[in-house]
Length: 177
Length: 448
Image (cartoon, rainbow over all chains, first blue to last red; front, side, top):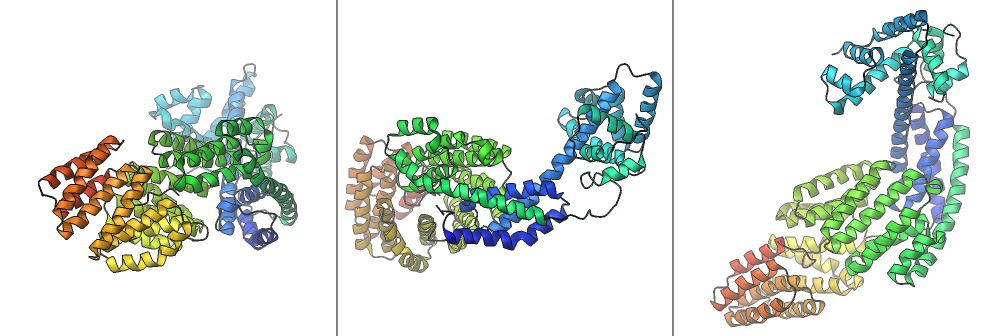
């Protein structure tokens, strides 16, 4: 076992962190990670390096590779949380039982306008989901998808919808289906 | 409600999916109206690719963050270093007790729930794999127990899952070495399940795949073993891990060799042995060279095999354990046989046969007997061949010898009785036995 209290190992660890700093920073900048979250990501990668030190033959490559992967995972998780939040909010809005008619009509108008900018496939899928209250298996059946793939298709459509919501003005999604 | 714009803070929290359900609903309802102002301010807080608006990269200052992360790292290093210092004493303490008591201790006593102790146990299992499979199994079992007790709060849940996966893979490897292939397969499945929930560290996955490839090799699932090793090579090269590249090459060589693809085996082993560090992996260096020499002899490259054997001989002697020295002697016998020094070959192989008999390695003794019969056949000593066959068969019938070994010996015995033993028959029986091999022998089965 390589003991970390040994001065030469401490030195090599410190040198590694110092030498890899510019590359680490480039990765964080490339992935546009907010500094407050970058700290968690970097600490996590560094701590893993510390625990697995003995197993890792090329620490700098490992650290850079791991940081990149963690940055990708960070945004993937955030994207997915945001899409979930939008989906839950819309499901809540359309399910509100006591909304006055005018409010319902306005919601329907706004929702249709956003959906109108999505591809035909996503438009149909999300209309079934929000307009008719279909569950995933019913959507799959109605649209001719396998139950195993409907989750993936729904997620893509939710991502497209979320992009529309945060778009400046409503851009039309490419009609590629 | 719709016309009232959410505050900048609320929009930021929406972008980070940190709002309550009610707040979320309000923001989404507002955004559905197509509010350009809010969409614009939200764009800075949404994941890349989520916003269609183009604002260019937001300026980020990471200096403070790096300083804080550096300080936190030094604190963690100091704590971990303490644990590392305590680990060898904990291991010694455990070793004073019988195995059942060791298990109880690691389950009940928090002192043993440390990452470095777990790593020490797994390391110990790895090193014992060659010499003492039963103890390797015990060390791996203890490693698994310790890994299951580790605090996910202290070490991080994904990291602990990675280490548990490593522990299960080490146990699977120890089970493979003990020829318990069914348990080994189950343990590998469990290790892979743990890995899929872990940190996603590709090198950790590659380590598990490297061990699993050995199981597939032993089960003669050569295509799957090669596929796994190719995946390991891709990962190891991507992360610049030359040792892992070398290990994967050596394993690929052994898989090719076992499946009868001698030329490819030689090519992979040649490449693999160049990359292994003899200081950290002396056993692997010996195992890789040993197999390379055997395949070179098979391929008729005797002079290269002899050169290599002379170069690696000191390392065999340095390793010093009995099995390695027996293997060395066996190789020397084969080299002498192929060089036409038949009396020397006979003397060496007889000595190997007696050592294998003492160790109760029946399968290997059967293989050895065929090598010896080859020497006698070349000498034209049909009488000695008959004697050898007559001595061997009853001896092996008394012992627990594999069905295949016994069947080959019966064929050999009958041929000897009729003076029909030829070098071709010996080679055929020898190849057959090697293909049916389930125990370690002339070709070192990899235990790394």
